[in-house]
Amino acid sequence: MGARVPLRRREPLVQCGVAQAVGTAESGGAPDRPTGGAPERLQSQAGMRGGRIELVGLEKRFGDFVAVAGIDLEIAAGEFFSLLGPSGCGKTTTLRLIAGFEQPSAGSILLDGFDLVRTPPHRRPVNTVFQSYALFPHLTVEDNIAYGLRWQQGLSKVDKRRRVGDAIALVRLEGLGKRKPAQLSGGQQQRVALARALVLEPSVLLLDEPLGALDAKLRKALQHELTALQRDVGITFVYVTHDQEEALTMSDRLAVMDSGHVAQVGPPREVYTEPADAYVADFLGVANLLSVDVRGAAPEGGWQVELAGATLRAESGAVDGPGRAKIVIRPERARIVEYGLSGENHLAGMIDRLVYLGPTTQVVVRLPHGDTVQVLVANTDDSVPHTPGTAVTLVLPCDALRVLPADERLEQPDDAAAAT
Image (cartoon, rainbow, N blue to C red):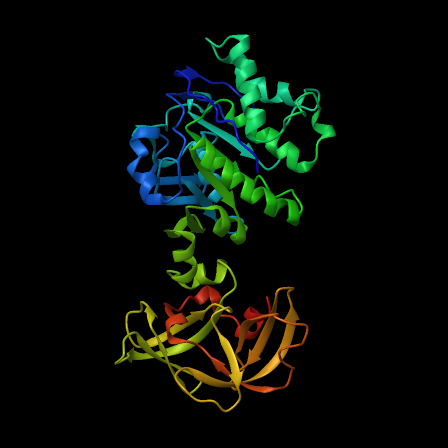
């Protein structure tokens, strides 16, 4: 990666930036450089760095439509926090409310304990980077980055040049300062937009799907660069995306949003392995969701459920009691063994189809009652691990099964769900 140059601490000042690309701000000091990324450590140092966000009963209505429905959310200082959800879930509206581009219908937006609701965008210590980047085509890289510094009082030309140089080094654009945006690749333009926001040294950086316009390979490379950059500068990043892999890869914590509500908040691993409901399980990653009848608590712990006449045990999950529910298991946790083997949570099935994915093969197993289950099998050699039409035994480990309340919105044929 090469050495990065941290932006230096500066005195409080009023910032002014570029509409849509750089939110402007009045800020009280740059954050200290972090040494790690654990949320607990971030919480403990929140008072030292600044940039702690609290959304309290935040609501936004557009006429009769409720875009954000009274959410409560806390984001630690120095945290990389993602708002994740499908189009129309309210994640971008929430970001715009924090930036000041929209006014809330109700609720508070606290930054380090100060309510920003009545503070205009150009007075908030918050900068924003959008997917479009909004670079000035007639300005060089250096001039684009320096644009927001024009309105900062108390900065000499030498200080401005130094800060622009630091920002260029931070995003690894050395030697490109005299180029125009049209002479840069998409990834380089994204770095210019980041540098233009970071040169103003905000307490919080808001990013609205900044990698969405890039090709898959470049997007994956920049995910790692952006995460490393956030660790270097140490400020709070609030990242909006509909890409589950981005959110899982980059975030300290994430919030899954649903129709203006926060469905679940937590570290990526926790939200992925312990979804709060069927909506979260279905949206975040690939999931096998099967309708079952809950019979009651299992003597060994967990829940006893019935799936098409077979009794299974799920170690985790929370339901009110007997009745209809869903069980979820991730494809990488299910296993395929020789037909005829018996044991706990063993089901007879038949290979329905194979989907080659490069490092793995997606094996779709059809159960006797018609449901299908996806299983990920590692491609350790060139041979095809299974053949369609082969009878097999499907193993659903009890520690990988989770019981969830039934969700009417997800009541669709399981075969169709598995095929997506």
